[in-house]
Amino acid sequence: MLRRAREFSGFALPGLLLYAGLVLVPIVWTVVLGFTDRNRFAPATHFVGLDQFHRLAQDDQFWLVLKNTFVVTAIVVIVPNVLGLALALLLNRDTLLYRLLRSVFFTPVILSGIVVSVMWQNLLRPWLADPGMALFSIGGILCWQLLGFCVVVYLAGLNAVPKELYEAATVDGAGWWRRFRSVTWPMIAPAVTINTVMLLISGFKVYEHILVLTNGGPGRNTTASIAFDVIEKGVRGDRIGFAAAEATVMLAIIVLLSGIVLRLLQRREVQL
Image (cartoon, rainbow, N blue to C red; front, side, top):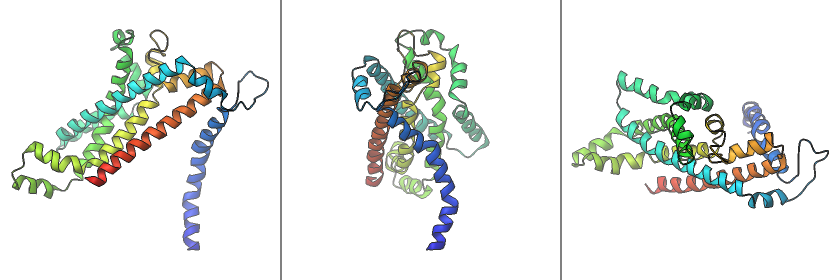
């Protein structure tokens, strides 16, 4: 037992310390700052309790960027999930052509958001300048970039489905739709869970696409997301305490939504 504990410490402890230093400590420090009036140019920092959160609740700009974030997230969760599954069904063939096509669809995933945004900037310039279409254009670009991730995850799920189940369904006279509904859809439930949660998080933390494509415009915060607003207020506006409170609310919403979605989809996996 002691030997196993030492082996675990030797392998896991460095990783845990690195994770704590790069992830947990910044998160805790941000939450702490949310309860202060921290300002880069202020002579001292004071504890103000829930004052920053109270101001946040009364800030119309916060509710606007939160609405924008939910709109983009809804687009990003639905569109790549549906199209990704459809493309995975089409590309689920073990030939050289289909393997090449999988690589093509996955290429945008490995590109940075800035590179993708620059690529699409000129193509979508008329829509990005339209206040009614700019937010949906950004959502569309995100969908294009994340589509390949969904395709790969669904392909992995499809390859894990036992062939015997399809053979048995065919013998029973099941057509394509019945095989999909009775065999494919239940068996790829874990892939649906992974894609939905990852897309939810990706949509909620969108920042660099907005920075490059619209810088929050056209107009005042027409396309600004909550992540974009946090950077604007904390870095450019020097309202560090207020931005930290907003980031804390953003983290809480992501954790809450991800937990709810994960619980519902995992319950579906068990039921299936």
